[in-house]
Length: 240
Image (cartoon, rainbow, N blue to C red; front, top):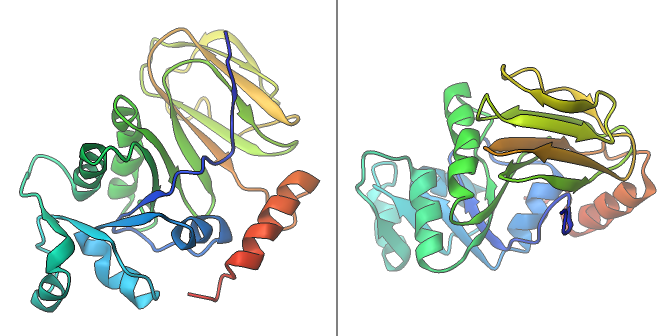
């Protein structure tokens, strides 16, 4: 039974900034401006400061943080020396320890492709103990552990990535539907398109990632236009 429609973005006000490309699109910028707290991976600290924002917490092994910044932010450093995981995972783990279980991740893509893929794939691991979304300059990734309806609009670009090759999927409300089929290769669930205000992804078990692209700033959907317009009024792309 489907209990709810997964919204395009969740209002998660705990924001983690990773050391990828700093966001420029109005949607991720709005999350930064409205954050209740910004948890910064240590390597992203200087970039965050250059954009006029202050971290509430800095997490990592501190190898990327200058001595000056270590002294300046000594009160909010969380030193984690675990070399078996990356700073993004350390930051998520820190948030969960604080019981901040609704997390928006920004700046996790856009530089090295291997780092981007690794960060995106970790979402499914995080989903076992937190509610997470990864927002880029192009759209939103969410992990999927069970069937769900997704908020959308006609023409929205949608991709589904199966992390368990034996999972049986059903797609409805998209241009290329599926009925009880496997997605055995990474590309097979990509480049689909929503047909209306929502679509359905069914799965019998396993883990997947769902990506939904923003409507452009000139999206046809009036609802998306209104949402983006409200965000743009709060955060102009050149305001940081």
